[in-house]
Image (spheres, rainbow, N blue to C red):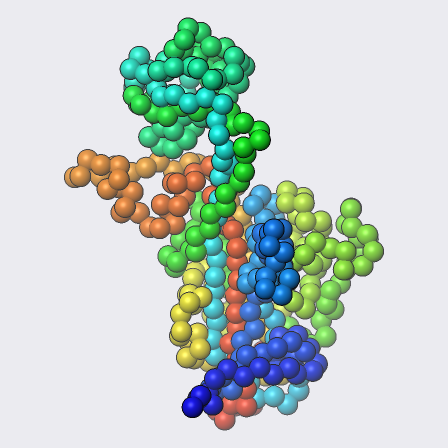
Amino acid sequence: MFSTRALKQKVMPGGVGGIDSSGPAAYRQGRKFEVSTVQVDPFLQASLAGGDAFGGSVSTGIQIPQVQGSGRYLIMLARAKFNQGRRVRLVGIRQYVSMGATQTNGTPEGSTTVAEASNGQALPLVAGVLNVVATAGFPAGPSTLTIDTMIGPQSFTYTAIGSGTTFTGVSGGAPGSSLTLGDPVDGPLLPSSIYTSYFEKPIVTPRWRFPDGNISWHVMALQPNVPTPSFLGALPIGVTGNINNQAPGFAFNNTSGPAILGNSGMGDASYVPPNGGRPFGVPLTPDLGNIHDMRWPWDSANSWRESVDVPINDPCDIVLYASVQQTNTESRNLPSLPRSPIACSDAAGFSALAPEDQFLLTFPTNAAYWRIAGALVFAENCDEYNPSQQSVR
């Protein structure tokens, strides 16, 4: 027979994502339920299959804009509403963030390799000469080249093809690197063959961050009936009508569900966060108000086993925010591959790195924070509830 401890679904009137919520809450042993980040997935939305099994376009997490805006991205990940007279405790938190990158693929107009005459040639080149095995199939120029060097693919331009085995007027390459005999050399991609691949990797090292980027997490308590959403003054340029006209997953000032919050349009570099990029409300507890590490991994079962234990003194809303400083892929310092002094091998040095650093070295020019999600786990009707504890309002 099936166990009676299986998950049960219950719909409750009154709010969003909590014990007084109109949305579904998953219950299980101990009368626990979870609210988490569910939003429109731009990749699922655009899929040829038409979304998920029911034709929808929602998924877990929010896509982080890939360009560093004019302020930290303030993101509401989960929100639970509690009315007067409830006995509820926050018993678990879950965190998820990933890094991602894109790669343009296709068939090059020409392919060859670096010849002996350019072996060890120092970079960058400035209007120099590149010696290759052959130039058949490459555009006459001016055009572009991609050379897969020891530190990864690098971009170059050339003005013309010299003899049958040289490119002239070649410029490009990272300072301090060099060419090696046999490095693959490709011309521009045929337009009809171009497509984009997407790569995503969860961040699992608790304190890892980009050299110029970071994420903080905030569990906050809000007074009930905070305006949700609310416009401050005139609508931002390019936005008309009401809140329903905004981009999926984006809300102005504050909202009742998962979203990137802002006081401006969602045009990446023009983005302006509300409240200076700081979360609204007051910290639920001093230690939960500003978290700087991946303390509660998304896939850890401990989130459902009282990883925290905080009484909720209602009425209030409990909100999990993230404040994201996106990395700037254009101005940050590019990492270099460490070489193991004992094994005398680049591969040995690479394998010693954290998985996030390996991903960054694989995509040094465009790896960035990619997707973020969070969840709050609550237990209701708790016998140990102590109404004499200090209010979080």
